[in-house]
Image 1: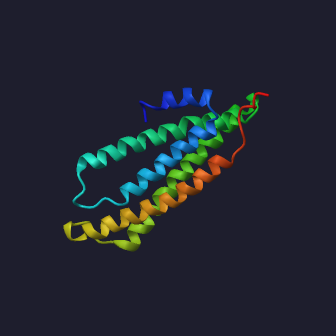
Image 2: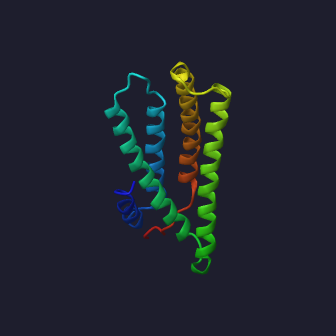
Image 3: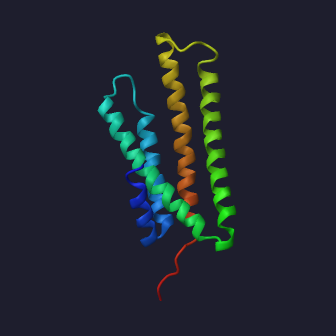
Length: 154
C-alpha cells in the first residue's frame, strides 16, 4: 500500500476517482475471497502474493476515495470533511473487529486456541472474510454510484 498509494493518488487526479476507487475495492473483494479459501496446506508464497495484491487494492481504493471526498466539499470545509473521513475509517475498523470477535466467540467460544482448536479458528477466519467479501461488494456498488468529480468535456 505504501508503494502504490502515491501512484493511485496521481492516477485519481487524471482519471475519475470513483473508477480508480471502485477498481481498488474490486481487487480487495477478490483477494478477500481468495484468502477465505486458504487452508492448512496453502503455500505461504500464495498467501504472500494475495496479501501483496490486497495492498495494491487498498492503495487503489484509499487515495482516490479520499480524493473524491475532499474534492466534493467546499475548500472552507476541508477540516470537517477530513474529520468525518477519519471518523468513518475508525468506525469501520471498530465494526470490523466487532465482527471478528463476534464470529470468533460464536465459533470458538472462550476456549484457549490450541492446535486442537485450529479448525475452529480457520472456520472463524473464513466466515469473517466471507462477510467482508459481501460488505466489499456493497462498497463497490456504493463507490460506482457516487457522482462524478470532474465535469465531462463537451
